[in-house]
Each structure stands twice: as structure tokens, then as C-alpha cells.
Image (cartoon, rainbow, N blue to C red; front, side, top):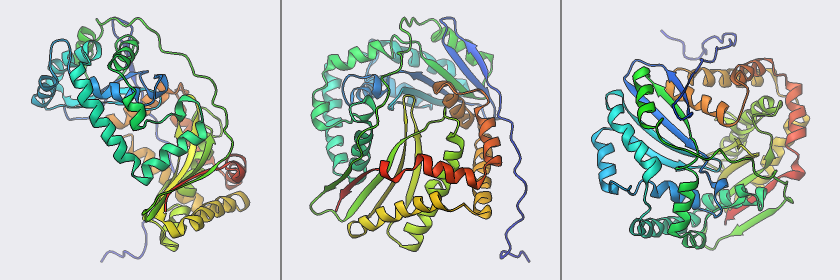
Amino acid sequence: MLDRSTPPPAFPIELVKFPTVDVFHLSNGIPVYSINLGEQPVFKLEIISPAGSKSGSKAGLANMVANLMRRGTLAHSAQAIHEAFDFLGAFWDIQANLDNANFSVYGLNKHFEALIPWVAELLKEATFSQEEYEKEIAIEIQKNKLNWQKTSFAASQLFRGQIFGNHAYGRYSSPESLADLSRNDLFDFYTSTWANVKPIIFLSGRISDQELQLLDRFIGQLRFDQPWPGKLPIVTPQAVQIEHDRRDGALQTSIRVGKLAIGRNHPDYFQFSILNTILGGYFGSRLQNNIREDKGFTYGISSSIVPLQESSYWVTGTDVNGENSEQTLEEIKKEIRILQNELVSEEELELVKNYLMGSFTGELTQAFDIAEKIKVIQLENLAPDFYDQFQTQIIQCQAQELREIANQYLNLDELHVVMVGA
């Protein structure tokens, strides 16, 4: 009979070679990063444009453009476009984040040739009709009003605004800012980014020369005249604030604690990432064990590093009963102090190393997951061997290094705090 009281033996951590990627350039110079892996005849196409929030002159502009791109072209209505993708069994989406915007399509290889002309049409010929604009802006304003009623949404927006200040990363949309967006604002942003800046393409799945040739036939013949925009001004650290937005009738409080942080290009990033995992980066983390398991204040708490192209930040987030908010904040600080003053035990460090290596290895079995990592390397201008370095640094990391990192990058006097709710 199987003895479930004894865990299976642990094995030494081994390095996993990061897969190579093929780079193909279309006739118009667009780079295509291709990952051919898997047995199923499926693909994922991602077209990246610098049409993220930081490139827009107004809050909410990039997201509204991503939404309205789907709402009609010179030749086809929104209904016709959606019916075509549905008929071909494809899932597609256009989303903007702080840095860039992503046009993604998942589908079967046998429909690749039929899908690509639709993608090309949306890239260059979206119309942003007044009728569709009015409908979409009304929907987004209502969504935004509802989102601001949620303490977790409000806390995240206010926190980002607090740490980035007047920088483009600090902007967030409101019903008023959305109402201020005109149809011309949206169309001008679309034509200056999506329709005119040469994108970067990532293609993964069971990929052959046929898919690459079709990309060149339909996307490689399009004209893009503008280069990618340069970097924005350097992010200036903002004065530390503690903000408590109290709301009548609220039962819970959403807490965000954090600060500007180092990103993936920094030599200490790997150790900082390990430290974050120990503190709040996985289900067995110290914050989970303290605030969830021991105190029972929350269903979940986590910390994370958010790498961005112009800057990065570190944040801890949770939702607790209002009466426990102040103690939760103190417990977060207490766990940081412990990491600053005490060495992580060999047992805990080995556990986290195995967790990180196991997670990384598991993410190298699917072409779509590998494409995400290749995308990080290219968009953040990282070294080609970034993920090989990551594994080496995990294996070699020592407890003394983590204590030094905690003191250097998690200074309690530099923490911004936002609490929204009770």
C-alpha cells in the first residue's frame, strides 16, 4: 500500500536549455519570431504595436482604440468581422497595456490563410465610425463607473498613480477622462501607431514555411513608415504617501503596499525575484502563511514584481475586513523586517528554488508559453541567454544575498501605501 505520509524524494535541480527561436523578416522588414513546437495543428499569432497607454496623450486612449479597432473597417462591418472569425473557429483579441498593444489570434493551421487577410485589414483599415464610437464610449464609461466602485480596482489605480506621479505610467482613466476622448483622438492615435509603426510579430505552434509565406503575402506587403518611439523621460521617485480612501458602507479594505523597483535588466533582478517569491510570490509564501493561514484575515495575499519597459515596481496586494486593515499592514512590514534581519533557512530556500525551477521547466513544454518568454526578451531588450542566467542564479543563490537584497530594495521608509474601503 502506498505510504502517503512520506513525501517523494527530492532530486538535484538541473538546468534546462532554453529553446532556440527562428527569426524571419517579412518583405517590409517586420521581424517574425517563430517557435515551431507541438503535435496539434494549431497556432498563436501575436502582433505587437507600441500603441500602449504610455504612448497616448490622454488616459484611456490606448484601451479605447484597442476596443474600437474591432468595430468595422472600410470594407466590413463589425458584425461581418466577428462572424468571419467565429466561422473559422478562431479566438482573437486586441488589448493595450501600459507599454504596448497586442493583437492576438488563436486558430487552426488549416484556416491560417483565410484568417490573415482579416488581420491585415484590421491593422490598416479600421474606420472608427461615429456610430460605433458613441456606442463603445458609452459602454466603457459605464464599465469604468462600476470598476471604481470596486475597492480592489480603485486601490490598484490609485497606487500606480501614487508611485509614478505625472509620468505616463501614473495615468488612469475615469468616466470624465473617457468622456473627453473624441472620435478624432482615437482615429489619430490608431493611424500614428497601429497603422503606421512597423510591428513585431510572434508566431508559435506547429509552424511551417507555409505560415511564414502567408504572413509575408498579406502582412509583408503592408507599408509602415514610422519607427518605434523612443524612451519616455526617466521615472522620478515620488514622495512616500499613505492614503486611506474610506468608503461609507464598505465591509472590506483593499490594501496595496509597494515602491519603484528594479526590472529584469538589473543584475540583482534574479535574487530580488527569489526574495519576492519567499515573501509573497507563491501559495506557500510567508505572507500567505502569516496573514491567511495564521491570522485568517484574507482569502489570499501576494506580492509581485511588475517589470515595465521604462521602469518597474514591486507591490503587495490583499483584501481584508476593515477592522483588520491596520494590523495587516503591520504584519506585511514585520515579514519584510524579518527578511532584512534573519537569514532564510536552507530548507525554505531549497523549497523555493525547486518551486521556481519546476515552474520554469513546466513553462517550456508548450510553444505558446515559450513565445511569451521570447516576447519578454525582445520587448525588454534582454540578453538572449536571460533565462539561462535566471536558472543559474536560482541554483547559486545564497541566503546572505537575499538578506542584503531585502535591505537594499525593500526599505520600509520608501513604501507607498494605499487602502480603499472600510
